Length: 235
Image (cartoon, rainbow, N blue to C red):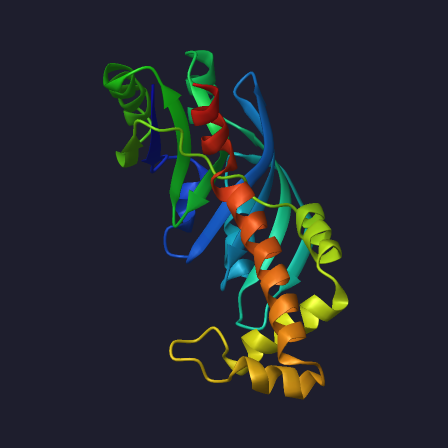
């Protein structure tokens, strides 16, 4: 078995209109029926108004509802959108599913490209998938691996659970360490200085920092490598 990430510029699809918008998006959930797609898409861009306007006004879009919108300090904004689109032909994802391909995770959009990870029997099946998608636009293979490369995207509940798992004192030490440059190379502050600022002993600061880092690293490992570890352990 192999995994591959395919990127296609879907001529006639709304994603292709976002090529100059410095935008990425992820389908949080989606389904297809009779050439019509239904999806919840999370967009991120520093030109979010342009992104939303272009998607909303696209010929294929029948329903468009902004469910949630938020900004960041660096000028980027996120928007969660419910979309219903209708096509004259079967859209790429529906075609792949109809032909028996196995998508892994959620499809995504990046700078005008529609991207999907597929679990494939062999390279011959990959060539067939490329031929299918080639009917929609230019196709590129972004990666190819004989391992199951799949990263789960943490949800808001996942982050809240992580925050709840880190004690207030651990979070205080970790936050100050990041703020003061403890993790920079070279370090901009010593552990003793962090401890003094928090009015705790160096040993206590070290313990809190070590436990907080362990929880954060474990959280990242579970979402980045957990599924692949599970596949190998089952072999």
